[in-house]
Amino acid sequence: MAPNATVHDPLSPSMPKPTISPPLIAGVPHAAIARPVPLEVTVEARHRYEILVERGLLARYGALLRSQVGAVSVAVLTDHDVHARYGAALLESLARAGLTAETLLVSPGEQSKSLEVLGVLLERLAAISFDRRGVIVNFGGGVICDLGGFLASTYMRGVAYVNFSTTLIGQVDASVGGKVAVNSPVAKNLIGAFHHPRHVAGDPELLATLTHRDFRSGMAEAIKVAIISGPELFATLEQRQAAVTARDPDVLGSVILEAARLKVELLRPDPYEQDLQRALNLGHTLGHPIETEMGYRGIKHGEAVAIGMGVATAIALEKELIPPSAARRIFDLLQAYDLLGFEEPIDAARVVERVRYIRLIRGKHLYFVLPEDVGRVRITDALEDQDLVRGFADYALEVRRRIGR
Ligand SMILES: NC(=O)c1ccc[n+]([C@@H]2O[C@H](COP(=O)([O-])OP(=O)(O)OC[C@H]3O[C@@H](n4cnc5c(N)ncnc54)[C@H](O)[C@@H]3O)[C@@H](O)[C@H]2O)c1
Ligand SMILES: [Zn+2]
Image (cartoon, rainbow, N blue to C red):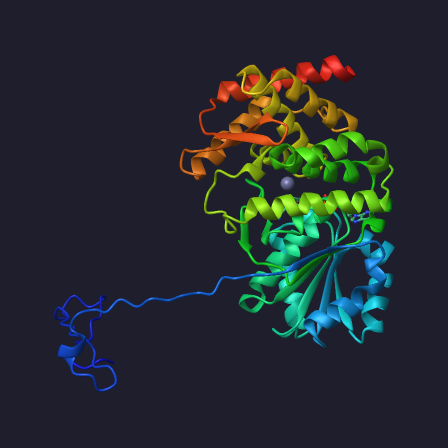
């Protein structure tokens, strides 16, 4: 206890008032520390990592990982389906490089991005005595990248991880940027952190086995970044649609790298998302509440984002912020990749209700990203609820005109 401090028991009313004078620190007389001296803490926050997307990378991956992280313990986080398809190939590749790995398995799908699953995984890491020099290999789609990144950020206050993403969403978007999270029943990605991977890897050959819905879901994120700042990528997606849809690994590989490059450029000025006015939220301000409304079932993330982009385009058109020819190109591209319309009926009023809730927890301002042209967006907080309801209705009309549902 510091000298001159009287013990104060708040439960005892008879105790005298405490008199506390500055403590004597390491022999420094009181007078010398009478005025508080501000302390400054500088935290080094530089991160540099590679994004490697290459055909056939899976077979070489063990050697790559070993060359970057050394002979450390490895925990592979993956889902049952990815494990069944590609788990053996990954483990063999790691073994050839002299790395032995524990495998942590979760159920496939968005439901695994939960606090419950995170808790089980943390216990599991502790049970296998995973040490803080080890590395977690996230081997799967965006769910695995988000969940495993958050796991890595919380276990022992942070261990290293890498993303080897096996879905298009993972490769073009989720594996890059260090945003990691799990969902809560009230809002998507509500519980999370920023924790950057040691590297990002992907093999476009693995995309051959994605379902049509998972593939188009990934295309939605590629189209998103093209609308925001990639008119050339947008044109490539228009012109090479046949090869992209056929999942030609070379064409896909270059689309993925260009989409990831555009994302990195957009993140550069604001890596920790201080600014909530982010162009990368295009399609998400409505897409996330749509997913929450559907209970994270029945709709894929990219499908919800595509609806969000369609509604944003309809709003921009109605407000005459975008030339009709550019809006037509956006609707055409969404249609070309089978991203137009609703797989299941969506209650627009309830989605807008959820938007209102998010606005509340964000402190009134909620920013919407609207396309102004192909390759350019505008960010506004001036949209009213009725603009959103109208946007939904206009978009639904556009969908009915084009595909009759
Ligand atoms: N952190 C970010 O910046 C960011 C960005 C975009 C998306 N996300 C998140 O990503 C998630 C969606 O990603 P996702 O669609 O990849 O989800 P996912 O990980 O659930 O993968 C979708 C499905 O594809 C299967 N799969 C994975 N690889 C496969 C392969 N090669 N062949 C066959 N099937 C395969 C999985 O088993 C799963 O059923 C969402 O939770 C979203 O919020 C995060
Ligand atoms: Zn997204």
